[in-house]
Image 1 (cartoon, rainbow, N blue to C red):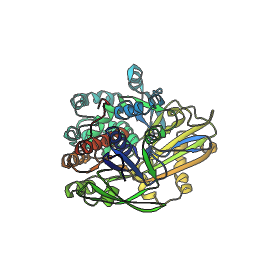
Image 2: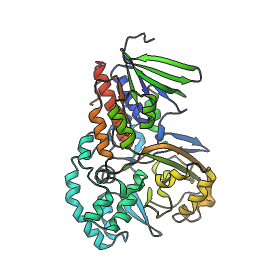
Image 3: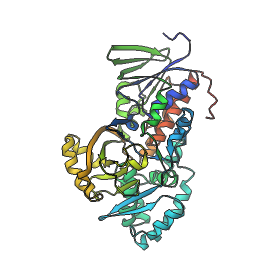
Image 4: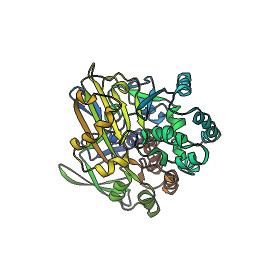
Length: 454
């Protein structure tokens, strides 16, 4: 029973979308409970502690454009956990890692000098500059309709039409694939413009204490129930009836409003009353990607300067990204030791989901050895997490589908949706989607917005 008479809301899911929604609703005066099926908060931004290491189980990299996330981090007292490490990205091609500094004069010098691309291809990139400049005003986290206007063809189609195969296969495919962990050439050209403006030119960020720093700090200020699985949501005259289960048994709570943040397939399962146009778009027009997170604790820290090494499709077997997490997150590994993250491509992961951890390592370590020779002899442990699904599989048409969902969402609905199928798929995009869902619900519940500068 809600004794203080504040409107009561339930947020389903304690990933960053759910935590952002709950944080904003609580600021605006609602009594909020967050229900999370897992035993910890954060979703794909969670971390675990093992043998003196802080091990991320999903996402690794933050970008300087993540303003919504950074704002909340500041509000909950962990803004100083974010750092700006020297941004060096390595691109693997034909047995060689080509390291390029991110942004600034150093990055320009490195790109001009790198043998990653031929001189002809470097000059050909100038053809894309007018399109890149025109796209700048439309890329971002808040305007799905504007992003959709850019969603006209795949990166491969754009390269075949205007650029060349070398740029496609050895620059754009590895860089985009390394960030989104799906075949980069099959992404929409809208995703390329977004990545250039908001990730590469925006700069990369690191953090102290593992990726969990954000979710744990936000959750500490909320009523979060872990091990709480929502099984059904039904609209009622008051708002919604939420059925959920935990170790104590089944619970039925009637509340004034709900924010639903699990993946599209899970959201449709627990909330079957989603409008048919929205539900069919979520399930039929947006593909899901399976992710595999492999973290290796090392007895010796590799000497490589790069924060990330990315590889195009097939260049390193199934590997898309190698992240040097002892550099991204100071304190993630004990002094002198190393922590490396491996993210294989969705296309490699999906047919191997049934393999054991040992079988997966047996397949992937020989490819890692091509970048870090001898590393297998320094592995202290391997932590492997399977996410099924773990993200959206971006391609041509995905941004248009996301825009349609946003257009069809009823802002007056007492049950609002948030997550990567509602925003720009990324950590910050999920935060923004949670804030937007909270804003819509707060308006419906006639809450008074807090003075947070939003």
